[in-house]
Image (tube, rainbow, N blue to C red; front, side, top):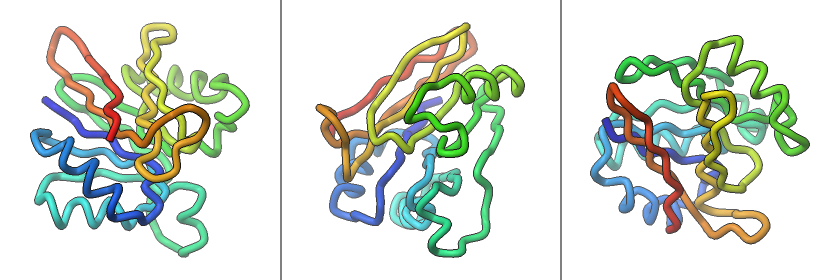
Length: 159
């Protein structure tokens, strides 16, 4: 299964369209927050299944939804969160702890606007970066995760 990953799209449909073009061959799209309504837009224009969570900026809109989701995909356990409740701009310690509590194989998150693809204690921590407002030396980006019974391959895609 091929999974497209978006985060921190912040209502910029021009950048979002570029990311959608890069993810046209995916089976599912995960959106890790900021803005949740962008996930609804992606679903409408792609006709694909899209699963999203709320981010810290979504609080301003009074949206009702989840800040965390645990998903079973192809026999792998995914933890989807924006990440702001785990203070990930400081370090990943609390996020790692939560991932272990949930027995996650993959953690998909955003918030930092910096792409990250690392493995810690046999858990993949994947942040696709931001399509709109990348920070540091990062370029606008999204991501792709391929899952099969044997392995999980994650990659950041510049847009």
